[in-house]
Image 1: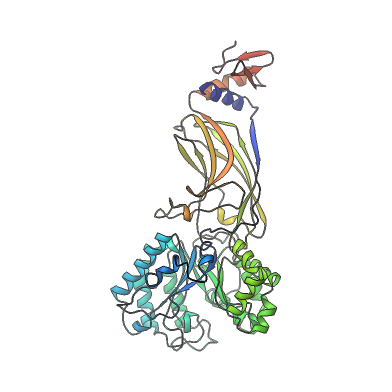
Image 2 (image 1 turned 180 degrees about the vertical axis):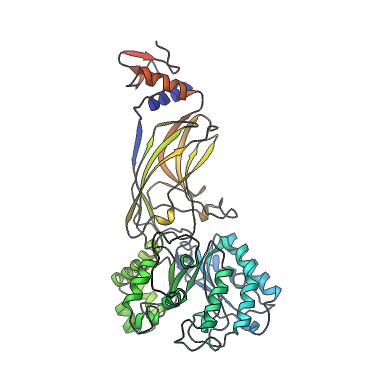
Length: 507
């Protein structure tokens, strides 16, 4: 085996690089879970928390594994849950240590089950009696360290707190429903931006809230994206998907016009998340808007990464009956596919290795939270991960193809051997990075390794770390064309009519 390694390295450095081109088979059918995307179900929807009833997730933990639940079959594809924390019993007091402890314990349960959450806090679901600004700010400040501690299992944080359901409309203490951003509401956003972990997005209910907060309608650009500024951290949620009147004002520009805000959110959501649920309760309207083509066109235009699977049933039931639900299950958020890749057959430890990969994102949206891609070299004795520079958050959606051309530096301590190659996108948080449930699966045939969370690139490379670089340089001077030859069961190097062994000695 040692001679085989050196011969290939000589071929590599002699300028006649032998490469493997792999063409991958796309999987356009299979529905499977992937982190930070897909359908959600809501927990805590009508539970008013108290010191003695201080959990949302723990109180309904059987949701994760109850086979008698009518929607249990859908759960095998889910990685997100919508959590509603109703704090109505604390409108005139500080949050108790019991409430904060309950939240912390709920997050631990999510982590245990391989889930993340879409998170919102509010005060009531059947009235507009929210808390005053002073108490809202105290509650947000109390939650801040717990949000930071549990950012790993928070996908997005919705602004919440204001109005019925925390949806910033019907409100006692923050102005009437037409006042999208008065002074009090602005202070809530500022407090939430401060409390929201810097590596997570804060979603606002109406596009106008964000444009008024920044004083313009300039949508994010590629240069603005993922920079950590407040503008780059605020995304959108729409809890009136497909409804009349610009999705119940979601796209209202303040003057009853919807076109400008539709264009704004379409551009914005290439770089910040968007999701929510439908609230269409009219069967006649649902019959019109829940058509598969209509629904999918809206999801793709506004780059939806998550959507409620239950409410409102007039729409979700039609999705289930007309095939839309299955399609959404496949393409909400991102869905990456390997198209083709080129790798050298051999490489030198301490040297460089050129790789090319084409990746298609057939999903509705990009990845949004930070995630690093790695090329992993694995065999029975060693595993080496090398970071790929290409940012997976910029692998654009709606069937766009990203071509990765990179030259990777192999560590000089890498042992000699034949390595299988894998593409690995683990979670960025160290607390769950090793959990394969939080790694990204590609939609290809025969590539997913569920035990490791890696995608098999169906290719191997021989790496040498035994002085092969110097020998290769010497051969390059004397043998501009080098070939592999199998003779008497031994691989040799052929230069013209002469043969050399693995150490470059003429035979």
